[in-house]
Image 1 (cartoon, rainbow, N blue to C red):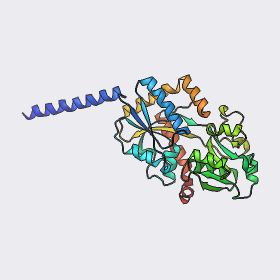
Image 2 (cartoon, one colour):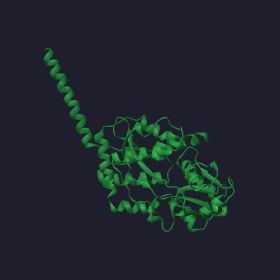
Image 3 (cartoon, one colour):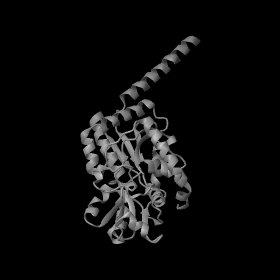
Image 4 (cartoon, helix red, strand yellow):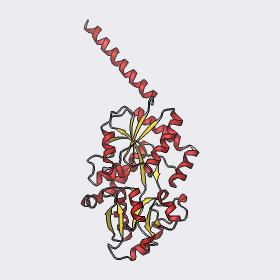
Length: 318
């Protein structure tokens, strides 16, 4: 009798394992909720929605984008952390959401607390821009300004705040750093003359640059992004300021590795599609980039190590 019970329990366990394996193999079977810690219309939202469109084309399964801005993206990242690790809740974020938030003390968790899938894209379209009203036309103008006379708009504790800190150190300048909020709010503040300089995606301000309302000071890439035209890097202007922003696909901790791996395979397939590359170029002047899980984790940990020395400065501004 006892052996019969044991055999039955063993068979049941094997059946459960088999069922789970089939479920993982067949993933995805229903709509996936993609949570992002940003408002609609920005570069993160654009990348997430572009990915979702091609994900459905590849898999036949849709994604719904849920925007949860605020709190330095901690509202979004907390929601993903607390979600069921069943493969149907996913975070689409960037280093500002999962590294800068930890460094600044906005979050007491970081990349190690999620199942990192891959780096689906790298933001190489960021620039520092000045309002035309500021009179600044180059980095040299900024370096010649009186300390504290130039106002840099950012979101305290966020990625652009760190941008400002690293730029100031590399350029040897001292700016008045103020909290203006999101990318849309930074644009409004630049146009309204309330701030002089901000870090932002070129695609979001291109029309204002071409219209003469803003001036691009440079791009923080180690090599020029050819999609940005003749905008010089800061390195080319003798400023030690290189700062790329990888996007991150992550699942709640405990999500089955088979699901995480399959998402990585789908994203790799998307990254190889010419029409996807065209959409990124048209949307935010962004070249295609993809890093699988191991390379992604290595890159993200290296970025975390680079940002940690700014921990006290970020936390002091909160």
